[in-house]
Image (cartoon, rainbow, N blue to C red; front, side, top):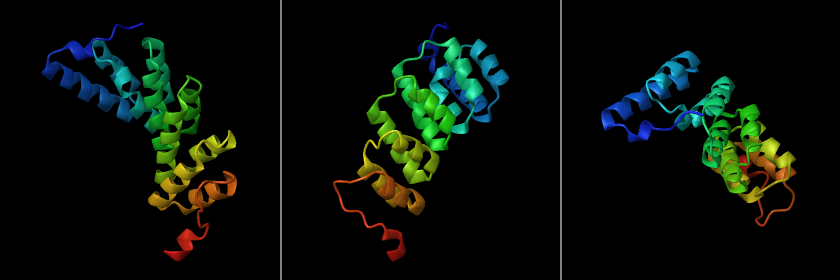
Length: 167
């Protein structure tokens, strides 16, 4: 496993490595990411970006090179939910992401409009229907709003299924 050390560098070197590793991962360019890693970049700090963009190959590479902690997998799950990348979300979930992080991640997915992520969590047992319904409502996502009402069972708050018809 690679020793983590980018954070101990002088600020200008840290910024260079941070920016270039982020740029390579954002583009899905694993070769460029590896090249900047050789210069001292710690790629795991951008696992959320790889997850959001759907670059499973980069996530697997990061996993092979670093001793990832639960926090890293939480960031991965959040990124995957933000990008609607269900395969990566499920993978991060298997790494022991806690329920609170899953709830937040799915809430963001409901607000942004990623029904696939919401369906996956609800099919496994709804964690907090009110949270998802409220997030879908705030995000203006009628399909997710109604899906949650129809599939989460009883909630502690009355939700008007026809809310979007009235606005």
